[in-house]
Every structure is written in C-alpha cells, then in structure tokens.
Image (cartoon, rainbow, N blue to C red):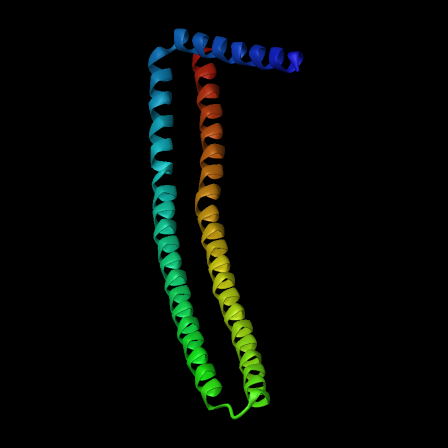
Length: 172
C-alpha cells in the first residue's frame, strides 16, 4: 500500500515537473492548449446533458403511467371487494338454513381468491413493465452518455499527445 502511494506521488510529481517545464518553455502554447482542451470538454457535455434531460422526462412519464395503472387497479380491487361483500350479505340474508349459508360463503371465498390472484398478477405485470421501461431508459442513456465520454477522452488524449509532439519538434 505504501509503495503504491509512493508510486502515485512519484507519477504526479513527474507529471507536474513536465507541465512546469512545458509552461516555462512556451507559456502561450500551454495556455492555448489548456483553453482548447477546456472548450472541447464543454462541447462534449452538450449531448450527455440533453440525453440526461430526455431520460429524466422519460422516467417521469413512466412513473406517472405506472402510478396511474396502479391507482386504477386499486380502484377496481376496492370496487370488486365492496361488491363481493354486498353480495355476501345478500346471500346471508337470503339463506334458508346454515348449510346454504356455509355453501354460499365457500363459493364467495373461492371467487375472492381467484380475484385476488388475478389482481396480484395484474400488479406484477404493471411493475414488470415499469422495470423493463426503466431498464430501457437506463441502457439508452448509458449508450448516449458513456460512449461519447469515452470517445472524448480518447480524442483528448490523442490531441494532447500530438500537441506535445508538435511542441517538442518546435523546441528542437
């Protein structure tokens, strides 16, 4: 760990010494290079910022759609439950004897269980669709942001290397 830290410090010192030497040799070229590098960096942020904003809008839309579907499902579930309760009370009031009441309640429980399973499956479908939508938005955003960033880093390294080569040739 200590040797890694020493290596890091040594690398940083060498880089700083190279920059100081470069600045002392041709300060105007160094400043121009720095400004050009900064301008390229700012330009390279335009697309990622747009992609992130677009993704934010898509995520907001997806979350609103998901919330709407869940609220509608909950409303349907409540309406069905209230209807089943009313029907159960009507059956209980109309039952001629205890056997008819128990039979009606057993049938009502079976129907309720089926409804609950269907409602749970529908909720699962809603959440699954939302998860897939989030995944698609995430992948799309990553592709729009990460690739340009990697390309910019490669371009910047290439530009920096060619500028150093040009200065060395000029100095010689």
